[in-house]
Image 1 (cartoon, rainbow, N blue to C red):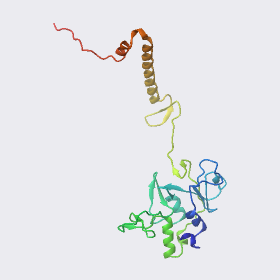
Image 2 (image 1 turned 45 degrees about the horizontal axis):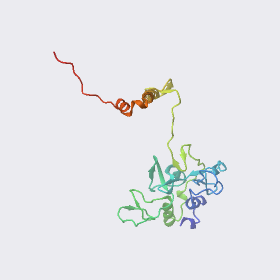
Image 3 (image 1 turned 180 degrees about the horizontal axis):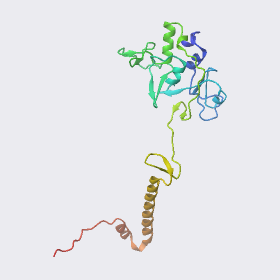
Image 4 (image 1 turned 90 degrees about the vertical axis):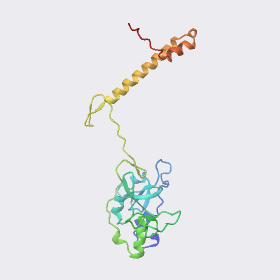
Length: 243
């Protein structure tokens, strides 16, 4: 196991053994206190509230995919060689698993499998996770220093990411703007809003007239007359006689 090998840097051991997405004990009374950030300088998992104290450190965003911890492939490649590690696409971004996942049933033995844990893979991959590749290199080469990259700067992603999962940005048109044919915004009234407002006004007037008609029918008129007028249908058409 990697945690028993002295050849591994401490930040790798901390990254692969940390229990992410558990509540932060320091900020247990605050919302969104899941530990979904890893500080490479302190070798520990932190939450978004802790990141303010670690703002000058190298911070790595941890994400979740099918209930397991993953890294964006672009972030992982800044830290180590990720060649032949199978990646997956989620929310239009490629990710790789940190650790191997437990298998509920053994592999069928046909096709491509992980060199370390025998999990079924697609060609041309040899490893299902970063941990599996590092374990294989330690077992065969005995040293992983040539696969580790010196990353001096690692920052959290831009806003638009929440709890380790990418979320699309929601953009609302400013009030009083109008989309031109080119898609740009200009001053004036939005035609779509104007049409929607006009339709709403017509519906309101119809309902108001109908409500007024119902209130005008006194109890003496009887329900049959009001129902007949409201739900009246066209009778048999009368044509002028032919001369």
